[in-house]
Image 1 (cartoon, rainbow, N blue to C red):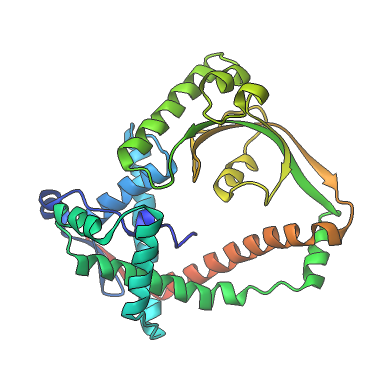
Image 2 (image 1 turned 90 degrees about the vertical axis):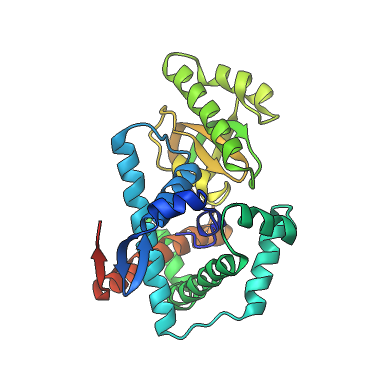
Amino acid sequence: MKLALMLLLLALPLGANAQQTFDRIALTVNNQAITLFEIETRTKDITLAKGAAAAGDEAKAKLRAEAVESLINDALLVSRAMEKKIAIDDAAVEQELENFLKTRGMNRAGLEAMLEAEGISIVDYKTRVRLHLMREQLVRLEVEAQVVLEDAEIKRMFEENGGKTKVIHARHILFRLAENAPPHLAEEARLRAVEVRQKILKGLRFTEAARQFSEDPSAQGNAGDLGFFSQGQMVPEFEAVAFNLPPLQVSEPVRTKFGYHLVEVLETRYDQAQSFEMIKEQFKRAAFKDAYEQRFQKFMAQLRSKAEIHDFR
């Protein structure tokens, strides 16, 4: 779970009228309320972030269920942070706001005008930022800090894996999009990717599609071929899909900081590493990620087992 995803944290509401329509309590988690409006907003955010298709009742239901789980997890983390008396001062909130504005090329006046148009006060917005920072600090203390992998343990895991590392040969088609692009541009890019994917499924060769449609400057020469690579060499969102994609299948659109990608894996193999020392850091990053995810899931399960959750839907 990536708690620093500001897209989900700082998502803007649908507007004052929509808020009046949906803003009734749907669930409570340890006496913290989750409203219908929050569920609707989070569902839209997850849909955009994942590049998921909006059509179909079953797909919508799955996205909505994911949104509910996300909001419950947020509430569980905030509840635990309060129990641990984690406090975020005003200076930290202001610094986080400044970082957010800087990465998006906005100024304070622009943010406040946008919030006002959507019926949100700057005070409420800062509250969201404060809760986000509380969750982050809690996870650092009770999850990340508890994951300690000594070199001896890393080497043992490496040897249990036969001294081999998984590498894949893949290619991609990029639909370029700025990391901070507004939702309507993100949706346009996603739909372009969906359209090209349909063309490939109907018989267009992936290499031809890459040359025709990819916005990666190198695609004209290499047809999107990325060669062989191991984990830790690509951005995490890309790797999460590529390393779990069966050979010769075309992925759904994948969102990264570069835009949307269509991915096709040509071959998977396990290469013998030259030596543990040469790949120790790369293997350690992958092992830490796995250990962190396991620790986080266990931590969340513990919080949930002790929580009082009431569903009023």
